[in-house]
Picture (cartoon, rainbow, N blue to C red):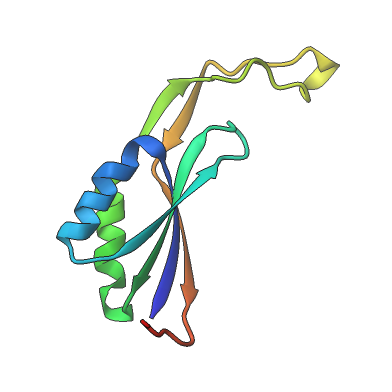
Length: 108
């Protein structure tokens, strides 16, 4: 069994949870905040049997798409010369998935 720690952008969460439910996968939703952009995202904990791992990863890939958006932060203060840099467009979205082996699982 695997535990997938899956970090997705807030605007993808509803679609992903719906797709997971349709695929008979279960997830626990946790609110989280991204480090670089300091914007809200969601962390999903998904338990999955080893033989269904590829299926759930395909659901995540189909649902969580990358997109470009304007940089919401004012400036990045650690640029050369200390003048700060504003990024025009940045790529956001998609998903970051960590797969962890589960030694023991009990549903109580």
